[in-house]
Length: 224
Ligand SMILES: Nc1ncnc2c1ncn2[C@@H]1O[C@H](COP(=O)(O)OP(=O)(O)OP(=O)(O)O)[C@@H](O)[C@H]1O
Ligand SMILES: [Mg+2]
Figure 1 (spheres, rainbow, N blue to C red):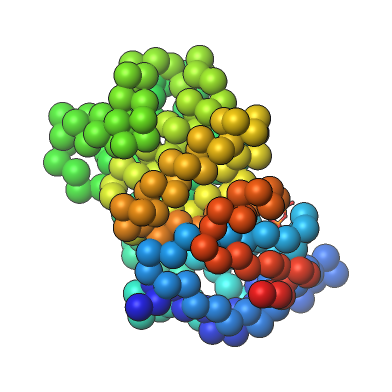
Figure 2 (cartoon, rainbow, N blue to C red):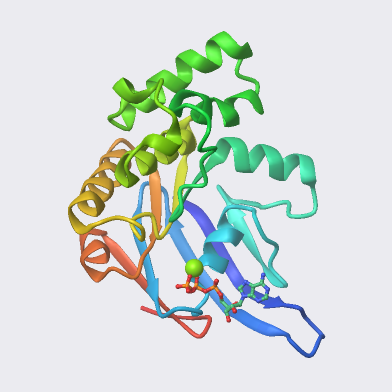
């Protein structure tokens, strides 16, 4: 079963203006539930744009994106907020953490925006997510005082907090050395084996090779 289906998706930034950019051009693509997919391509080829459309962070100019067979409701802020919080988890190159807060507090953030049953339940769920990410012991440490790899594990725990079906990772190892990178990729692979659909945008071909399927973008077009 397809978890994502893109039908003729085009994304033009600043459409109709002098500075218009076609970031994605008429993309049709299926992503199966439980896939481990890498998206590769040169800088500017549209990788992040594609991930943002999947994650409901940006809106296609034309075409449609289906999630579990239903159109993503890009025009409904409430639907989108719920979708972004509960169905997909984002992991970014620069972690996007609240550095002055503890690992646990960072992971609590998405839980407090969902119907998690209050602070006590959120803390318990966050602790469990940190354990899944292999850093249950770092719950009380300030995010800003952790190593790059540890920060990325906090970000992965945060992405897991609401038990999403999908992890969308945009250059998740871009800021890490090669040993730490491969640990983070192993963690993403483990999560995939536990049933999550994982999409990794990467420049690193050694990471892409570990994924079951690789999609190459060039100038906004898919080359398989
Ligand atoms: N918010 C925006 N406004 C205007 N143009 C944008 C915007 N975001 C991206 N673009 C343009 O869209 C194209 C695709 O950008 P995108 O960020 O998707 O590329 P990428 O493959 O993720 O690149 P990188 O590997 O450098 O992260 C680029 O030409 C970029 O300049
Ligand atoms: Mg990018």
